[in-house]
Amino acid sequence: MSLHVPHFDESVIVRSATAEVIGHAPSTVRLLADSVSTGGALSAQRVTLTDGANGATPHRHTWSAELFYVLDGAAQLLSGDRIVTAERGDLVVVPPGAAHAFAAAPGRNADLLIVVTPGIERFEYFRHLARVGRGELPPESLLEVQERYDNHFLHHAAWDQERHRHQERHRHQG
Image 1 (cartoon, rainbow, N blue to C red):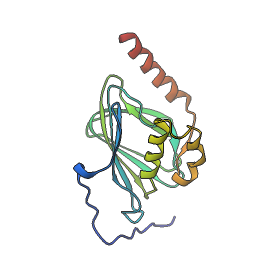
Image 2 (cartoon, rainbow, N blue to C red; image 1 turned 30 degrees about the horizontal axis):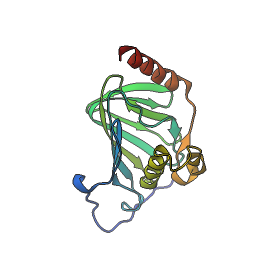
Image 3 (cartoon, rainbow, N blue to C red; image 1 turned 90 degrees about the horizontal axis):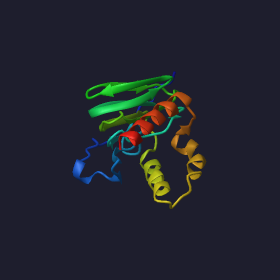
């Protein structure tokens, strides 16, 4: 096992008022710190999801662990083969290589602090996702950049079934 020793000279201070925000309800991402500013130590973002909204689809990172801290509300998380509901104050850390995904828990909002360590380039990944969402890039373009962002998409039947059940319940209640 090798130890990654980050190198950066100045403290990283990010003010909420000036942090870049990508997206809008039901899913917003506030970009906090990327690997460039932290010498590769970490990448951090705050994700806010409303009313059971989906966050990230199942994927894995080859080189990084991902930490999810629930600031408020409740999140449904895939961690390996487990689907867990994490409430305010709960922490889930997914090891490198493990499948994971996240969403707001059914009928709930979720406010999450997400940290990837060691840091990988995330800001441009989220900007790329936004361009796909606006129709400026085709969804297939994400497959072309999986290695660059160490974000490898997966199919996970249990997660898909759980989220489908949530969507069906939501549709029948609406």
